[in-house]
Amino acid sequence: MIAQYILDGVALGAVYALLALSYSLIFGVIRIVNFAQGELITFGCMGALAGWSVTAGLATPVRIVLMLLGAVTASCAAGIAMERLLFRPLSRRSSPALLGLIASLGASIFLQNTLRLCVSSSDIAFPRLISVTPLTVFGLQIAPVQLVLLSMTAVLALTTTFFVERTRVGLTIIAVRDNRDLAEANGIAVPVVLRSVFIAASGLAAAAGVMMGLYYGVARYDMGFLPGIKGFTACIMGGLGNVRGAAVAGILLGLVESLGAAYVSSAYKDGYAFLLLILVLLVRPHGLFGDGDSV
Image (cartoon, rainbow, N blue to C red; front, side, top):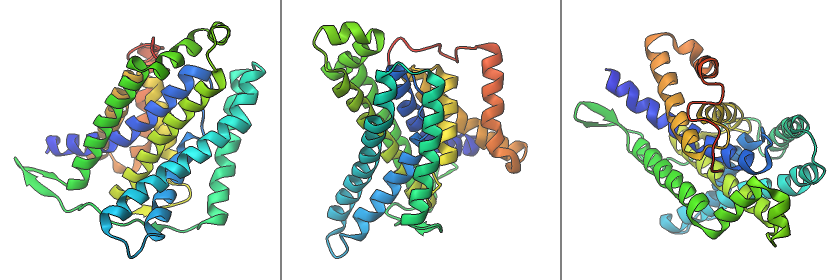
C-alpha cells in the first residue's frame, strides 16, 4: 500500500530534516559545510546512553530527563569544541570555504575513530522506551515511535524557525550572516553568535541521535556518518541556508528513499537520495526553494 510507504518515508525523513536544519544554520552564518555534523548525532546517542546507564535505580521519568540532558550535553560539548578549535580560527582568517570543508572531513574521521576506540566498535543496545509494535489506524500500520519522531521533528522545526526569525539572538545571527564586519562594528559579539549557532545546530543533532536510537534500538560509533551525508544532501536540495527548504527537503528525501526501496530495489536505497539531488540541481541549481534569505 503506497500510503504505508509514504508514512514510513516521512518518519525516516524526519531525521534527515533535523540534520538538514542543523547544516543550514551553520552554513547560513559561517558559509562552511561541516561534514562532522553527522558525528554529533553519534555523540548525542552515546550521551543519551550514558545518561540512562548512570541513573540505574532511579524512577523512569527522571532517567529519561537525564538521558536527554546527556544527549544534549555530549553533542553541544563536541560542537562547541569544533567551533572554538576549528571553525573560529578558519573564519577569523577568512580561509577559503574548501579549506573548512576539508578540515570538517578530517574532524569527522577523528571523532568516529575516537568513539570507536573509547566507547565500542560494536553495536550497543539502546533502550526501547517507546513501542515499535505497529498499531492499525485507518488501515495503516503506524508505530508509536514513528508518531514521536514526527511530533519531535515538527516541534523542533517550528522552534528553529521561530528562534531564527523572531528572537533577539536570531536577529543577531541574521545580522552576522549579512555583514559580519558591520555587525561587529555595531557592538554584536560575533564569537558569541557563532557559538550560539553551533549550540543550536548541535542540539538538533542530539535530538536526531536520540530519535535514531529509539527508532533502530542500537547505537554505533559510525551511525551518524551516512545520515549526516543525507542531511547535507537535503540541505542542498532545499537551498543552502534556507531553513524551511531544508526541513521540507529532508522529508522529501525520506519519501523517495522509502518509495524507491519498495518499488525499485531496497539494495540501492542509499543511492536514491543522491540521484534525486542530481536531478534537482539539473533543474534548479540553487535548490528547490533557492538560497535562503534567512539563516
